[in-house]
Amino acid sequence: MTEAVLLVGGQGTRLRPLTINTPKPMLPVAGVPFTVHQITRAREAGVTRIVLATSYRADVFREFIDVSDLGIEVVIATEDEPLGTGGAIRHALPFLDSGPDEPVLVFNGDVLTGLDIRGLVDHHDSTGSDVTLYLTPVDDPRAYGLVPTDLSGRVTAFLEKPTTDAEIVTHNINAGCYVFRRSVIDSIPGGRPVSVERETFPALLESGALVTGVVDSGYWLDLGTPLAFVQGSRDLVLGAAPSPAVPSHGDLLVLPGAQVSSRAQVHGGTVVGREAFIADGAVVDGCVVFDGARIEAGARVHNSIVGVGAVVGEGCVLHGTVVGDGAVIGAGNELLTGVRVWPGAILAPGTVRFSSDR
Ligand code: GDD
Ligand code: MG
Image 1: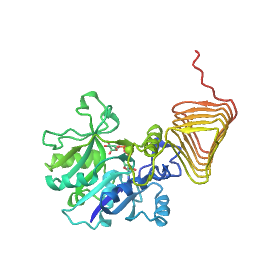
Image 2: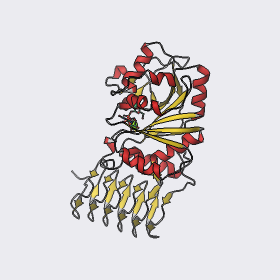
Image 3: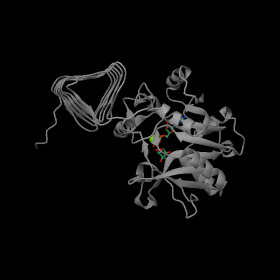
Image 4: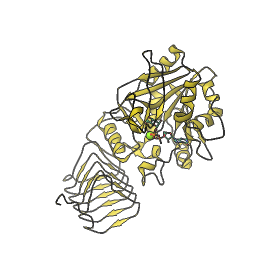
């Protein structure tokens, strides 16, 4: 048996307003909640039991898991107050059956990867490590945890979200998947918030524990921001990112009950949600259109997320925009990268225009 803890208790602040009612891992991506991609990948790697470490909107996970059969035992642990990443792993301990020397996988709940999960566990076992970290190289590491290693792969430091250039000592970052010897989880203090990145990993290194890094430069994406979220969805639909929960790939994914006009152009890995509607002449490229949303005639929508039941009016132009659930964007508005429209907001026709003229 291999057990895993999936950290899904964060507030998903950078994805607001989508995460006001739905926690980030429960947002639909390529037709299913994001967490299903991670759970089914873990299942394929031989994980037989998974603890969902929940906090923010734990009810949404519970309702979903109660009615779903994902082919793997899923147990829900809920922190009354968010305990941070390390505190959440410690809080999951009573829900684990693994012996003290057995490996326990831990995943951040918002990363999409092509990692060989089984290979990571095998590496952990063969090196006799206390903790093994999956690392990935990125161009700009500042938003992540930097993890330098020596020639043998031993981790020499852990620098979470560096603030100065001097701290950028490597481009290999913590990719959000670990293997812990279970007894190491026992040693995390209980009952108070702990950051695994800022407290547990530095303390383990200080104590001389064997912490090993495995660098894998395959597919990796943190879906924490709107643009990353649409990219992850697009990559799953197109087949660039692997998931057992996406049975077939194509230029678009149209979910049951959706209506797409034959005179609309929908492509680039767009997902059209259940009962959603795309009108004549609309162009929808690389987007996530949630259930029941409407994109009216002639609208051009790129790299954007259109919330549940939201309406994008005739002739609108949207690039890199998030439209909250139930919002109505009147005809002829132009919204560019970074704009977030709050749920239920109504934008009168022609209110916002983008002009490149100065
Ligand atoms: N249960 C629980 N309780 N989960 C939590 C809590 C908590 O209090 N706080 C955060 N989480 C979960 C989030 O839901 C998410 O799945 C994961 O822990 C990581 O939190 P993020 O908020 O997404 O962190 P990040 O993206 O800024 O940084 C983390 O991930 C990077 C890779 O994507 C760090 O682990 C970095 O070191 C890493 O490079
Ligand atoms: Mg993240």
